[in-house]
Image (cartoon, rainbow, N blue to C red; front, side, top):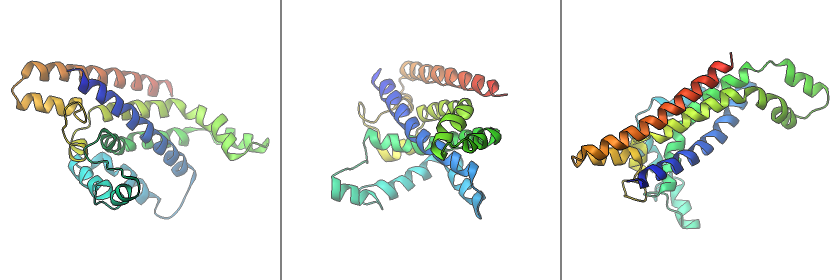
Length: 217
């Protein structure tokens, strides 16, 4: 019964790391640049938040499935098949979590007083040094809150994960899928226990992230 919990935690953690790396980079880039079509790019990055999970799952199949745009080359050149694997579940969870990190990171970077990075550059600091030593520390609370929300979202991911990773007990069956299975099988006790576990984890994450966001103001 604990296997879905540990698998879910592993998938959520790795997905948060992937979404975090991409979301922070994209958030910083979008906060610093002005260009034609910026609103369109922003809409694309936020799209996973509003699209049905099954649609995202289908896009992933088209992209990384065995015969997908990238998947066929991964299979042909490296022998990598992401379908029905926990690694595929990580990619699905990272995709649905990305908008939460991106939006929080962009807002945090935009809240940084431009005088501080400008002063660092005036004193001879390069762009990377300015980002690491000035901009990132000033934005870290907002980014951390976004990462925690992304972790909670990855914990509860169901639709896209089911389509790309399937439902293999002990291999790809996450808490959300295990709850669905328990309900379908009429095992109300197991469904209740699993529901309480994932609810408790998500409540803790939401409370902590809320405190971090309040601390920014």
